Structure formats: C-alpha cells, structure tokens
Length: 485
Image (cartoon, rainbow, N blue to C red; front, side, top):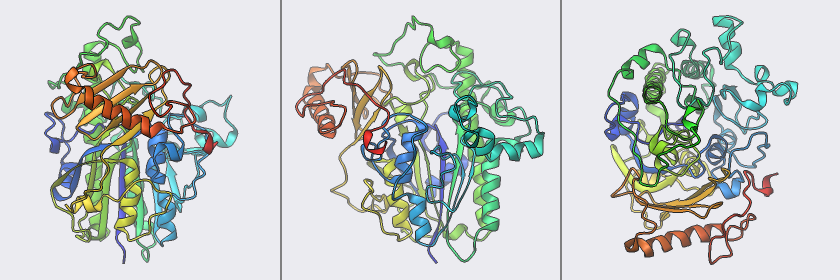
C-alpha cells in the first residue's frame, strides 16, 4: 500500500522557534525529534506572508502570480482545477482536513472528502450585517459547536477578551486545556484515524490556528516562560525608533514601541503556544503508533508564515523580513521509503509551493502541469541538484508598505513599490537584518543583480511595476490579480 501522509501546519510560527536550531529558551522536543530523524530545510520561505495567499500556494503548488493572491483578501472564491487534496483523492487516498483552511466559500472542500473547520475569528463571517446566513460563523465553524456541547452553550472564542490579532496582549486560556483549539485539532485528527477507511491510504492535514493571536496558551505552558529572561528583539539601523504616532498603544499593532512588560508577556505567550502545539503533536504521533500506522506515514511540518514579535519594532506578518517570511519546514519519513538523509539540513532555498509536489512525489502521484513548485525529495535525499532555483521571489500588497522581494536565504533584496525604498541584507553575515547595505558601495553590483531579478519577475504584470529596465514606483497595487476574479 502507498504511504500515508500526515501534513501538519501551524499558523504564524517563526522559522527560528525550534530548540533544534539552538533557540535559547524554547522547548520543542517533538519537532526537534522529527528534525533529528528527518530533514530540515534551513532556508524555507513563504512568498506572500499572510494566511490567504500562503495557503493558496500550499493547496495549489502555484506561485502567487499564478494562483493570483498577492495580498490578503477574503471572500474571493477558490476555483482551482488542481489542488493537493484533490490529487490525493483522485489517486485513491482518503482525505481529511482538521482545523484552518481559510478558503472561500468557507466550507469549500478544495478536493478533500471531508473537512472539520476552525479558521479562528474571521471578520467577514462574524459581521452579521454583511454576511449571508450560511456564511455566519456559527454555521461555518465546527470547533464552536463542539466547545459549546462540552463547556456550555454560552461559550465563544472571544470570551477571554483578546482580539484575534492582538499582537501585544496575552493571557492564559480561560477554560480547561482540553477545550483549547490546539487540543481540539488533535482530538479530531485522532478521531479521523479511528474512523478512516482502512482499505485506503490517508492524507490528513492537521492545521493548527495557533500560535497566531490570540496569545492564549494554557496556564501550564505560559508558566514555562512567564518569568524567564527572554531574548531581546533585534533592532536594525533602518528601524523606526521613535513611534511618533504611538502605534505601540494599539493592542493589535503591526509596529511601534510597546510597553516592555506587555511585549515580554506577549513573547512568553507566543513561545508557550508553540510548546503547547509541540506537546499536542506528540499526542498525535503517539496515536499514529496506537493505530498501527506510524511506520508507514510520511510527515511534513511547516507554517504558513511567521511573526515579527517585536523585531525592529514590528509585529505580526505580511512583511518580507526573516521573522515574517521565513518558516520552519521539516520532512520526516519513518517508513524509510524515501531514503532521506536522516538529520540532514538542506541549504537550498525552498518555498510553500514546493509542498504539493513533494507530497505527491512521496506518494507516487503525478504532479499536475499547473504546479510551479518542485519536489523537495531529491534535496532531502542529498542528491546534487545543480538546476535548483537560485532564488525565490515574493511580494505582498500592503498599502504604503507594499513590496517585492527576492532571496536565496543568504542575501535578500526588498523594494517598496509605493515609496521606492530599497533594502539589501547579507543574511550570512547579518541574519537578523540589522544593517541595510543598499547604499554600500561594496554591494553596488550585488544590489543591481538582485534588483534585476525582481524586475525580471515583474515583466508583464498587470500592475505595471516595471518597463523591463527599471522599477516604477507608485503603481496601484491590488490584493488579487484579475485572472482569478
């Protein structure tokens, strides 16, 4: 029988929050063990670091310019011919998603046989004045009815008082740990293992909504970090150190100087949510053993994007800096079928669009022509790949902060399309992006090379970002390209 596939995603987890990568305080024993026995990709990125476009890359294997989502916009229908779960289903797999999908319509199966959803707090389906009855959260969310049946019919996910994007406010989870959305995702995943069709291999996507805000870890995990000396955030020589608008007073801020105790509590809660997820991943891995499938299940773990968590006085995601755009990615194969280089760390730059072809390749399923990504298995096997891409291109429509970027994990070029500002970082020497080298005479040729790469990526784009020779500042941006509307 073909191998089972367990695809685990978290929402908004930074690349560096693994003890395996020598993080000074975080505890992630189960993820560390997956990396120890599998393969870790050192330079994995999301091309468009927010939930909707990142998940489009995961589900379709396409680059943003082809799946059409180059910014964050809800309520745009998902109508892709080829999807990762759809290809697995057509190949005879029993397919299931538990947790966050963040597609539209909300209960669009996208090729899965079944879904059990908790997307978190979705503004468009919490606004009863703007949403139709079938889009209301109490019709589209599966976690909330489950919670109310067990903890009381007056329960809601807003009861702890934290906004879904509260980037600098934290408090412990207000109910028993077993009712937390993280536990629910694993409880439902284990239930799928119980009731799946045993005559078929399975493709299970366990999709956690944390460590995305609200920063609400169970008390036991919060206590691990609450009074610990936590690492100070890096502050680049280019960062805004004044915060004249006092953005740091906004509990859902994306930037600004925040009360230091609040910032530290938020960071402690963020780490705690990751350790809580790791704990529950251990529970899920144990269930694989108990159901007799642990030796024939390939596991891929990643995040849709990161969280800046105060780096350079910035918070949340969307931006091209390492804390936001760089992600953890681990491939583990207990079956030995793929002959992976155990404990290997891959140096080539990879991206979310590579996940679909990787998992299809692992299952021996043909990769559709629509897929832009490439299978990571040859890299994970340690095979020479001289034709592997030399960089990835990314972007995000984000108002005045809209940008284009390119990186190979060792250098990074960013162009802000509305202001014309450029940044260039030597990530080998400056992994925390402290020094903007764009005006350094020594780097002039390198900057020209990377700028040309971004120009080449943008030729022919409908926004008119380039004439093929230079970048054009101030062109209108859009979250969604016209070919998918």
